[in-house]
Image (cartoon, rainbow, N blue to C red; front, side, top):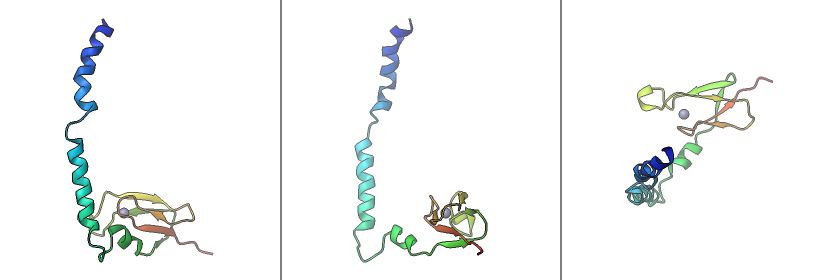
Length: 102
Ligand SMILES: [Zn+2]
């Protein structure tokens, strides 16, 4: 009985396997990126955030909110600073390093 119901179940799931409008969304994304990258005199967001020097922090863990005003930032992200290389916030791209006392 279970095997006889399987083809009908697969047919119901079919729209999810091949979503309509996938191509339309893809072209929207590339248009948006092209709009931001067409003016080469301006720096890209990635270049701008890389110009911010790594922030020195006391302690092993830093909480990043992207902005001092929570309404303008991002969900709080706790970042562990155990590695030697600067840790990067996955939301805003700010870099943090642990301020070692030697
Ligand atoms: Zn952040």
